[in-house]
Length: 182
Image (tube, rainbow, N blue to C red):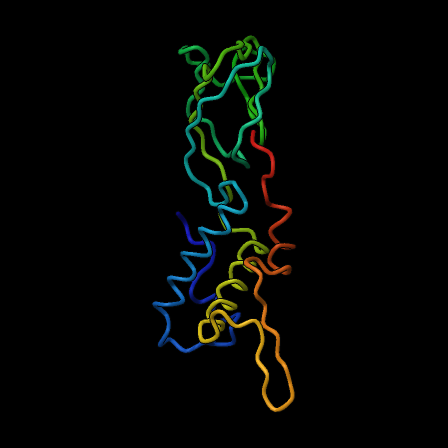
């Protein structure tokens, strides 16, 4: 699973944190990158995808991972469909989210469409990286007060963030989240 930020980016966000805890921060980056990807329910970094989809008898098929960068293989009922040499000729073309057929249909069937493609972004979108930076920095700074919701000292009470996903991170991630299965 790819990291959604870098050690340098987290250190810069934290105001130049000491290199003494680089191993710990690196572990947090890995853990929170995985947590954010699970929350988003989609691939972010460009990489290969292989899927079997159900045909529905139409000419278009929405793919579960996006943006689609390339399609390496499209098979319908075990038969390869070629890319279109020109618009209007038989074959497939694609958008950032769909495959479009001319001269073919996605025949109705369960799991009869086989697709291998590349999807995702070349670079992690800035707001996703920032959300991971905030989560890592928050958890790094909270490590000495695990389990505490507040602390009172000399008549003052300090309340700590205890949400699994703070509202600021949730707001940055919400537009990227895939909420309905495709």
